[in-house]
Length: 231
Image (cartoon, rainbow, N blue to C red; front, side, top):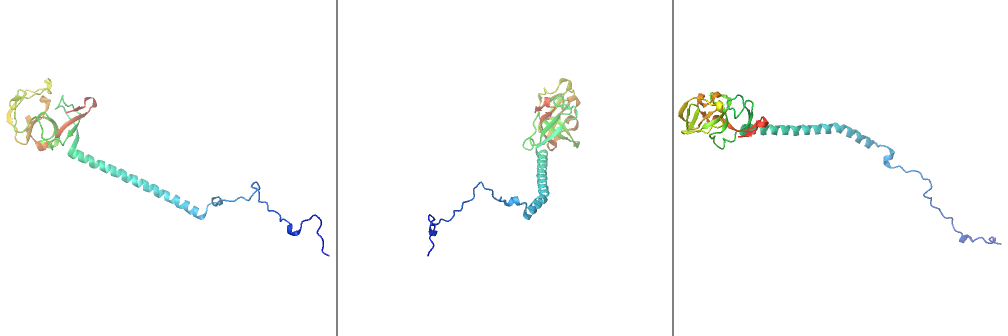
């Protein structure tokens, strides 16, 4: 006889398999490690060593570039200064009192060397010139007469083309009482004098000045600052 199922028990075909319960998020799990947490690899170590070795080379390259930049700047400044001094302007210092009271001993001047490259000296200009007897020396004087002018001095009074020169810049105590001329200034030459007439070595003593010996026009007295002046 076939065995009878116990009363109340389900048939074998009707039995439900047990459910699998997923693990709760609160349940402890084994930690997972990121690749970086596993420690440096051989590749990382080699990169770090190579980077440390490259640092001194980078610094040397930076210093080299800075030195080259400074050298270029200094070289450019030297070239510009040479061009300015040669063709443009020159700084000069007064030595002596032959131009007093207009200029004093140790005054600092800026001489415009371009002025007479594009123009001509004019009466009344204060100029820097080479001493005709010794061109290694330079003087500062005032132009009194130009080429073609007739100059004459009577008891210290200057006449240009028989017209008395306006010389209010000469202090009474600095006037001289000498005589000169009359004399006509040759072409390409100038007659110059110092404002301190009784204490100046000038064209009255060593003759006319060729234009090629006139360095430039005194443009500015920049020192001492309290007496700075543009001429």
